[in-house]
Amino acid sequence: MKKSTLIIVAFITLLSSCSQNKKSTQSIKQKADTYQVKIDSLLDAYDKNDEFMGSIILSQNGETVYENTVGFSDVKTNKKASTDTKYRIGSVTKSFTATLIFKAIEENKLDLNKTIGYYFTNVKNANKITIAQLLQHRSGIHSFTKDKWFFDNRTKYISSTEMLSKISKYESDFEPNSKGEYSNSNYFLLALILEKTYNTSYENLLQEKICKPLNLNNTYSGKGININDNESYSYKYDKKWNEFPETDLSSAKGTGSIVSTPKNLNSFFEGLLTGKVLSTESLTLMKTIKDRYGMGLFRYTTNDRQGFGHRGRIDEFRATSIYFSKDKLSFTLISNGSKIDINEIYTEILKLFLGDAPVAISENELKKFVGVYISQNDPNDKSVFIQENNTLINFIKNEFKAPLIYKGENRFVLEQMYAESISFTFSADGKQMVFEQGGNTWNYIKMNNLNKNS
Image (cartoon, rainbow, N blue to C red; front, side, top):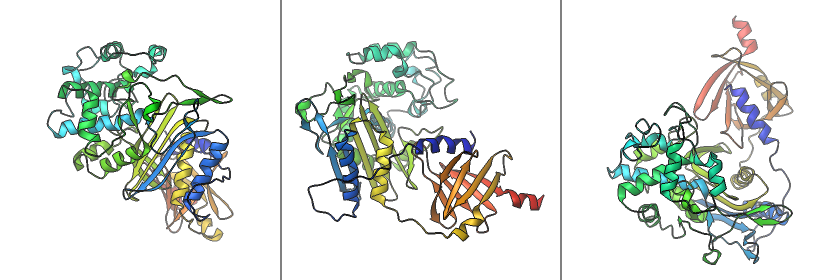
């Protein structure tokens, strides 16, 4: 895919981003210009408009610097959610499962490159698929969540035996290791491998190897939602908040079965990504991205910062948890009901917290970066930049305008909600430009400069 196409897709999503002015309250006294008040204002506006329910926490250097909760854990009884409310975290579970797999590898109980035929004789291509390929979504095994059967039966108890039987009957979506494609079946199988390897339950392994060492006292494999144990229901909005029928977590083992709190998730990802759980070698493998997927982790870039974590969704629960190592910053947002895209909310909150001051650049200085730049690898790949006052604009397909943020030293950034940020770094004379995204770089030369050299 050309870089310009990536920008178009991302820019269209930016058009819908939240930009309203918000105002709110909090119990402690704070100055009006602090990030706490600004984030409170944002959440209060969402709360008043019945747009969001859930909890947010930010931790830096292991200390909580902001936390807040809005909405109800049980609308029927008007039970307010609190910072200790426990939510289903959906696919954030996969980071826990991957961590358990790497713990087993470090204990010499599993081999990353071992094929899964030993464990699952009936799964298609089992003798070709490795544990590494399950972790990185490169197995080709069809995801059970794409099967109508699953959604027809998701509220019922489904045994692991029946789940394995269903997965074993799927034809492969693609040849193992030929590409990456997200599949919940991969992590269900990884959970079964862990249980067979240790001859104990996934829940026991979760507690023994992760929760107890990191003091995650509110993290566990869920069962039916228990509101009396401070768990939360999830809700869909249609004129009012309506309770959403809960998935029986028997079918989500290892892939979406965990219940936790935002504070526990911050502790987990900070512990994991600062080397308190796994070796440096294991962490490096988990963070290695191939076709957008790591091994139990995703890479996220927001506000020109790179972090690792995971997102999750189950029923109407949404979870996002990311650790930004450069800032030693942990962020978790969990929602049990939202009319707004969660990505918009977490992006806005991080902007308010980080509060990066804009770097000034004069209109005259911007002029040298205006023009058409041609890729040195593909003459048909062009990046066009125009100027509007003291803002440089990436003009895409003569139709979409993407304003760029100046970061200093001739570098401009396009922040994206659903993809990694894009960086444009120009030479001092504006005759060359380096396009960078996700660790990949492409070199461009200004068109009038090319003409002079031709």
